[in-house]
Image (cartoon, rainbow, N blue to C red):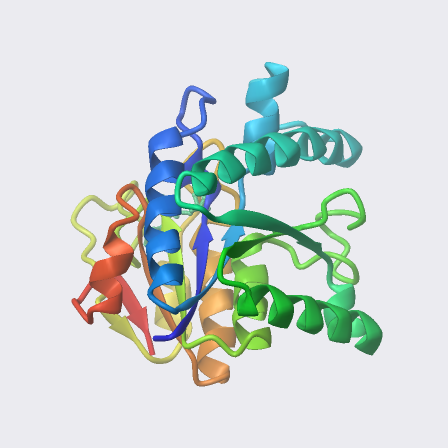
Length: 258
Ligand code: ADP
């Protein structure tokens, strides 16, 4: 794969005690910078703005009010980008913040602008685009007109847009299981999925952590979009981002959607 999109979830970035997992970010910066230097095109889609904002502001429950979530996300986004920037600078890379909304699908002019920005950024030797949804502009969790819904689907849309070879989705679990392992301890890892049928959908249980949002349901929706475009997605554990190297060398890792 020469062009890859990596999505990292909140549950990987934020520890249960509200502290950001700096080691993961540092490791991710190392891996993605190495790939970039090897001539690969890399885009990162990062969640975590609300979780980081909660830590910064000393809030321990995710706010229910949308406007509060938007405010917390705005605080967290700035902090998160600062942390990424520092981590990537270690490897001579700068980060490019791309906050996008559904407008890029609905309005041709927005679509063109985002495509042009991606193209320019990907042609640079030392810039890594980091994408997130623009939470202050998107209206609400329920408003499907303006909101992607979650970064899982956003990352699939980005993968389609930049015509990447592969989407690597880093979560807090080793892959897709036959049932939610938190509830069914003897559930087994499914190594490859080529169709998102009813059995697979039924196997996606609720979400496990206090910070994670979409659980498996939104990951399956993302996978569906990827498969529809004849692209590939690997879902795996992000605790050691080095695993990206294994994926790219073709080792069987996590769940491959192809
Ligand atoms: P992220 O923050 O990485 O997006 P989430 O917390 O939203 O991750 O989703 C991952 C969680 O989904 C897992 O920790 C697990 O508890 C839950 N889950 C539900 N059903 C399944 C399944 N069939 N296989 C794997 N995980 C599942």
